Image (cartoon, rainbow, N blue to C red; front, side):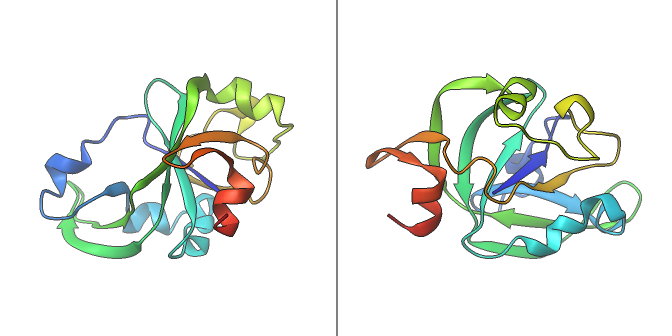
Length: 149
């Protein structure tokens, strides 16, 4: 399971009006930052949660596609996106720091369980597998969603 940093609230629907279900974008220069090396691990079927300016964790998506967009940022860097539908939500939004602390998350680029500068993609692997989400088929854990139960 991946956490993605959109604390600047980029408006994906406005930036990519012809691409459905954009979950997150990242530029070539951000991809070249070693802090974002976990991007390569995101594949079709991966589960992600995007953290916005509220610093709350709430909505989870299953990735359908990862691709370059043809769109460039203000510095001329090509932007890449991942797309996928919402598959579940927490019954109540939870502060990122609180949730990660409660699950014993420790990562060198998440000091005090907040994103460090330049850090946009973290693979939490199984750390949040016990987290229960509301889905269209009732409550499911992340582990159940990963396994397709």
